[in-house]
Image (cartoon, rainbow, N blue to C red; front, side):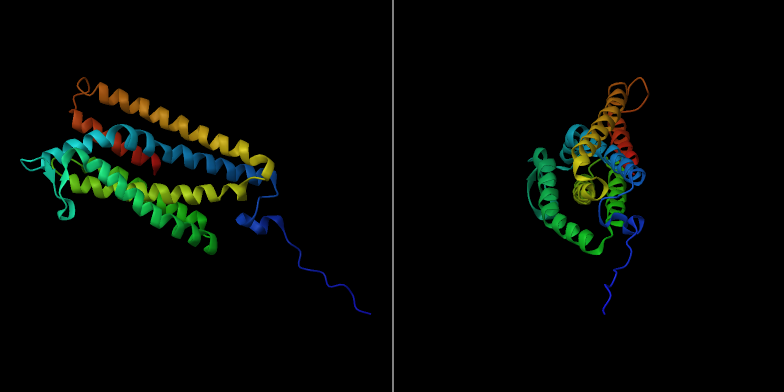
Length: 224
């Protein structure tokens, strides 16, 4: 008589991040970490991309432009007032190519956390380095923008891929909403502080350009 073969016992903690955490306390711990990643990186999209970098990088490009108002990244003539838009477009095109690859590697390797960490540190480092963007260093600004924005995009792909693994189906709407709320709260908080610095730079004894560079670098430090 043949007995029924019993499969190996599966311990919920040994599964780790391969599926939704069955232990409520462990899920909450993972969810808190997920919230705070949004808290950290949303400052890049608010303070850097939306408010400070565009006007400042345009001024840097104008300082480097020839008498006809052109700069020549990679030998391509670009109007100084359009350089920021071209740099953003280049970063978006590169992100479109890199994001599917990063997502596939993260899914197949199971190493989402290391990939998320690398993208965060690369993006934060590039953003912090914007403190050195001054004079006519428009190429440095364009390069740092592309690196930071691609790292931000890759990080968000991996970040979003965590949601099904840290929340049960009935929890996902609430967890996702809290993540967005944390991100918007941090973005607003740091932006208010940066605007206060920018608007009050004279009373603080710093130039307008220095104030902007401090605001850019602070976003990178917050992200990192």
